[in-house]
Length: 456
Image (cartoon, rainbow, N blue to C red; front, side):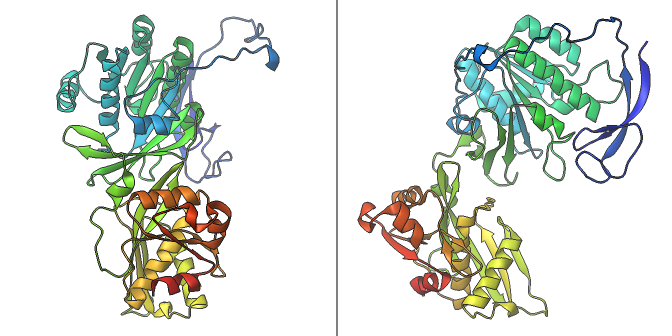
């Protein structure tokens, strides 16, 4: 019989210990150990495991090109690196109600139309509830099958018998194995379930999408080893009360992690936003101070954003500094640069910075947009609505070069902007002469003083 034993697991990295510790020696986090009862089976065979394993030289390994297949969502395919990779495991995380299950059910719809065998396994909803959600999304074909089950042994037998091409697990925290005595959602159960699905995906050639709940810190609940085991980790971001959603890749063994996909939540489900820049700039005020359009790069996609700033006299002894959508410490740094280099009395003022639309961006190229927005609000001057800017600002007040300057300028011209304020270094090294881009005037600046002179 297996002997029950109490072991302490780190909920961040999965480190095991026979006793409780305040700080994990693996990830150095505090108060992360949880007590669980596990069973350790005894090996009946005396043969050493792995005795028949043989190392293989690198030259003897045959290369074969894995053909990706589309999910029906170009935005999702972009984040995945060009499509769904066979026999891969994709972890999708996000806040409750953000649209994870809706997105994956729409992927099932697109795959079923392509006659791809899909199995949707739900541990949280009944078949009737899934049917109601599916009717809202649209029509499905018989290529999609539904299963409500949480037992890993039962799911293993079903997958080996049915052999679908794509499997959806909603969610990993509800799955459990009879071999482990702890409750579903614990560290041991989550790790065991992910390991079982990983073996099924690699052994049977099945692509598995796993839905993972997130903690209040915004990371997938359970040990961080869960993210190390899967091939791709995607996070669904955005305010659940807003219309837009952003799908961001934080890990991808088969592609870049810099790409994002933009979706809009509608009554029939999620719809792709083909032009995020136009969507983010909708509703921009005209003739208002403290507003400027900046350009950020996500992967290979330039996105135009409206940067808003409000600088006003403080009524208290300590001025308030608030930032929404960007780093507050970065805003404080830029305020110090303006006060030192332009002699602006910002130490007596409250400063509020907002990236319109609720999107979060931390690229250094937004520095120049934040600086010009704060100058515009402080001086009560309006920036031309057809002007766009981008560039990194250093502590000396210099405007430093950023990458992919030409792609940013072309995106601005496509949306009708006529003037672009950019680093002079980028204009000389990446743009060539000003005649290279027709229809938009390029203004190169070396420091924030020159940039302020362009808008005043």
